Image (cartoon, rainbow, N blue to C red; front, side):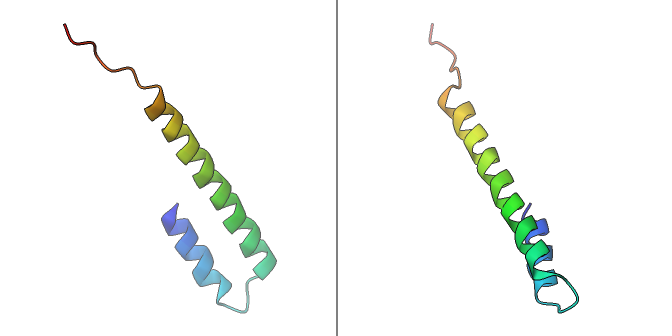
Length: 53
């Protein structure tokens, strides 16, 4: 995802790319990263630890 973000930022600096489309794709990336962090937090929160016998 970081590579995608870097590519989009580089593309936004060029005049031949539509800035609105770049912003749209950056927003989609932000949303995907947020969902991934939330999923990881839930997994970590509900991780079952082995019981000590």
